[in-house]
Image (cartoon, rainbow, N blue to C red; front, side):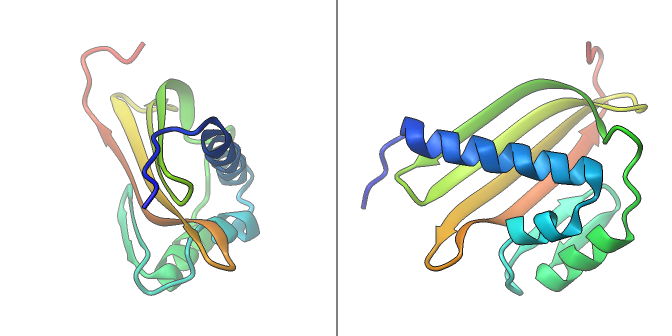
Amino acid sequence: MDVTVNRPDIVAEIAALFERYEQALVEKDVAVLDATFWDSPHTIRYALGENCYGFAEVHAARVAADPPPGGTKEARIRLEILTLGSDFATVNLEFKPRGKPGIGRQSQTWMRLPDRGWKVVSAHVSIMPAADCS
């Protein structure tokens, strides 16, 4: 099993997919958001005020969400991408939430699935108090 850490070509693939996902959040492009996540009852997404178990619940939350103008993130603080081999990756983002005190954290677990490509299989977003988010 190949577990080579952070092959540049794989990091670039994941970075591009993550940026596409982030833009889709701002634009509420549900088709892109849905295409990013694994269409499976095993997919999990925890976010602010929602716990989604399975793709159907993730989709329903996406359709119901009203994203704020300009998105939910005022500024990125730190983005970390880790890839292992050519089929597994994690993305972790620390950010300043738009219009809210505290610090935001977002994590995604990505897997390359046969005949489906890269998909998020698990995701989490939270906001916690912070002394200084500048």
